[in-house]
Image (cartoon, rainbow, N blue to C red; front, side, top):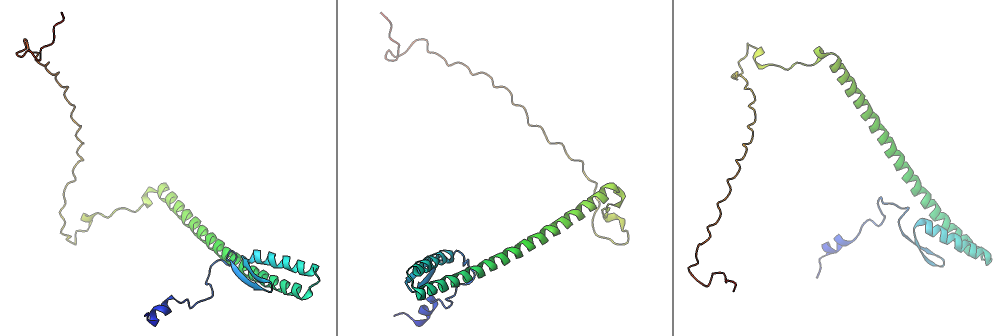
Length: 182
C-alpha cells in the first residue's frame, strides 16, 4: 500500500505552464464540433475554415461560435508574440550595453598603451627590495646567475660493421651437407 506522501509528490500542483513558448505549444481546443488540436496558428486556421463553412451553410450561430474561438486564439497568439518581442528587445538592449562597455574598455586600454609606449619614463618602475635600509626583511641578496647554455645532444658514433658468420669447412654430419649434383 502506498503512502499518501508518495502520491502527492507525483501530482503536478501547477497546471498552468510556466514560461515556455506558447507560439509553438500544442493545444487541445474543445470546440462545438469536437476537439481541435495544434499550435495556436493551426487552431486559428481550423476555426476560420469552420467559420466559412458554417457561413456557407447559413448556420449563423455556429459561425459566430467558430469566429469567437478563432478570436480567442488570435488574442492568445498576439499576447505571446508581444512577450517574445519584448524579451528580444530587452536582450538586444543588454547586448548593446555590453558591446558599448567592451568598446569603452578597449579604447581605455589602447589609450593607456599609447601613453606608456610614447613616454617610457611614465611607466611604473619595479620596487627593489634593497632600497629601504630602515627595515630588515630578512632576505639575503644573492648574485643572479647567468643562464647556462643547454647542452647539445651528443652525436652517435657510427656502428662498426658486423663480422661475417663463420661457414663450416666440412660438415661433420652428412645429413646437413648439401647434395652434390651428379
